[in-house]
Amino acid sequence: MFEKIVPTTMIRDCLIAVLEAFSDYETPVIKNVGKADGVVFKSIINHRFVKEMMRDDEDKVRSVYEAFETKFHIDGLYWLQYGLALRDFGNQAEALEKLKTAREAYASPQIEHAYAQQLMIIASLSQGWDDAEPLLKEAIDALRELNRVADATDTYPIVTLAEGHISVMLKFFGVEGAKAVTQQYANELLAAHRKYPGARLQEAVNKVVTVATTGVWKESYGPGYLEEN
Image (tube, rainbow, N blue to C red; front, side, top):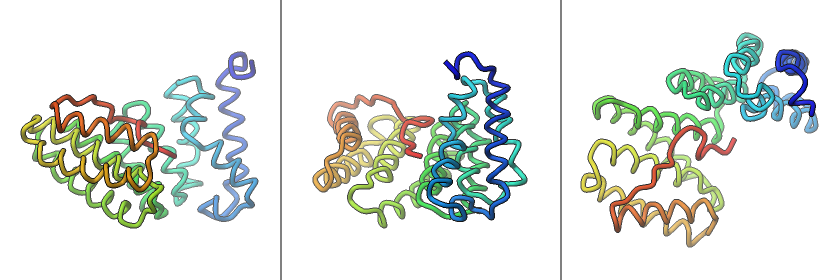
């Protein structure tokens, strides 16, 4: 009832007021507040929450994050959520810039994953291979490193890597041109699935095995699909 009746302008002002209270802390905020306050900060700054509260109004979502570009300028979580909010609205180049800033502000697997995924998204939207290739290579390197240090239960890096790489290769080289890469990831995903048979990993296995055996690819790679933050 609150979300439907209260004007979004008023809700935005409330969100900004609560976030203002956190701007007095040293950054990263999450490292300098208690556990309970940290949960509040993470919840309120979360891109899904802000988008829901603003009822999908892009201008109002932007206004929440824009209010803190100076005060949270070296807070990685802030820039991460800002970038993911822009991704949600299809502003992919802007999202990449915010995620680059997040990496510079604070190193974390979540930020690195979001940045690498954004590189994949932009590579998939590129008009030519010359533009897509360096983006794809940087994304692959980042996700390979994340996967190397991840434990068996963290399947996000390999799933993002497999689906993103295959999607880009299919766009530029077709099924035949992507065959070797597809088979490689089918083997890697099956090996990961034997260690930790999660539902999302199973979905990725099914997709990749299907394209490897039939040439049919169900495109699902895109903004927010693999993002876990």
